[in-house]
Amino acid sequence: MASKKDKLLYDLVIIGGGPAGCFAAERAAEAGLATILFEKKTLGGSCIGEGLFPTMAMMDAAKSLESVRRGAFAGTDRADTRMDYALMTKLRDKEVKLVQDRIIDSFARHKIKAVKEKAEIIGREKGYFLIDAAGTTCRAERILLATGAEAVLPRIFGLPEAFEKGTAMTHESLPLLKALPERLAVIGSGPSALEVAYYFLALGSQVTVVDVAGEIGGTLDKGVAAELREGLERRGMRFCLDTTPTLVNEDGIRTRSEDGESFVFADKVLISMGKAPSASGFGIEKLGIQTEFGAVVTDAQMRTNVAGVWAAGDVNGKLMAEHTAVREARAAISDMTGVKDLVRYESIPQIIRTAPEAAWVGETEITAGVKGLSVEVKRIAVQHPSMHKPGFESEGVYQLLLEKGSGRLLGAHLTGSHATEVILTAAFMIGSAWKMDTLLRFAYPHPTESETLRDALYGVES
Image 1 (spheres, rainbow, N blue to C red):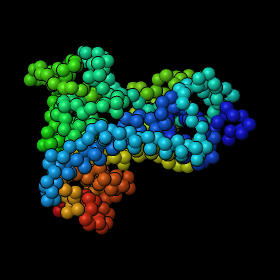
Image 2 (cartoon, helix red, strand yellow):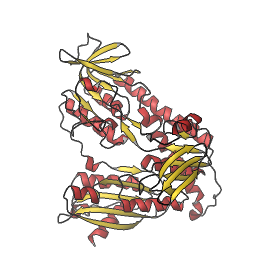
Image 3 (spheres, rainbow, N blue to C red):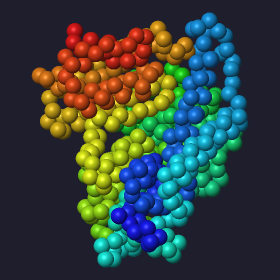
Image 4 (tube, helix red, strand yellow):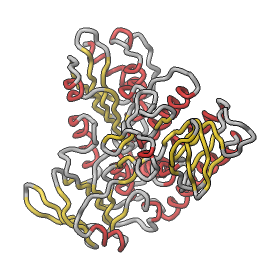
């Protein structure tokens, strides 16, 4: 343990103050480790400022608006309802500040020292790691790298100039948008891209999604992704897939596909092509920490190849999501404190909070084949229960992958109005390696969305 007399000696130095870093700092403090955290921007990281929490506020507003507009189902007539965009952004910013304030308060309660500076590893000395920040060097027995990721910016002609003029933007600059664009083009079709696209669509923008991919949703099963896309198209979203953006200017995007060249007119262009691990610039090469494709290599306990150094969150590039980062941070601190804990990525769900929603966990047909698993694929249409909120579609599609012979659930890909809530039940099933006969012994409460998974399992059984 660090000596109380040496103010620059710590049990743990955390580099990065996003979800992984903040959660790890709190867990470490609770375990009695003298901890210091370095974050050059704001505590909570990009997830708080431009990622999860702003998106949550935006999605809730958008879905509430759609529910009201489509409320004739429930006997109301509010089809002309509009959202006050300026007021919405103020409420969103207020919510973000509340979350950031809660983190600051938590750090104060846990007596965690947070320094708003960039930290860099400068070497080792007498068994301790040396970390420099703004000319001050501290020593530590352990390091947790939680430096997150940065937006991937494609090489498109005219894009730098479009950023300068304010036509192009990233998720980081999205909160600065003061007015609702009449026409929005989104380059990218992963979860974050689709969520922002849906938000602006619900608020009244004309939205076009452009991507080189042949289908939306990233690693979501392609058949289920097609169902999601069709649901978004019914709401008015336009998709240009298998399409390469070749130019961005103040009028929009020039594209190229098998059908030739075209132009997508837009007032604003959002670049949302995912993230790349942010591992460079922190001195990790001075310790010989292994990386692959820019990501820090870790095992299931978040250990790197250097004893005493762990990495959690987007920097290891395994599954970039806030809930994954928190789970990894817990595993890292558990390992530091002698508690056995392994992260099982096959049971970590991924979600898309549009309307309809999509969520998935575990294997796909492709990954199962690569691993040599013999699976049955069951695709089942589900009907949501009567408690289903008015204004949303009452049907969904669930695709389940079961191991042949045992009936063990290996993967679940869902789309429907509450897929992002139902998916956790499927994650529990996969994480616990439950078989069909076990899954059907549970009583799924009525009327709740969990019944849809039960009905899908009944469909498999029959």
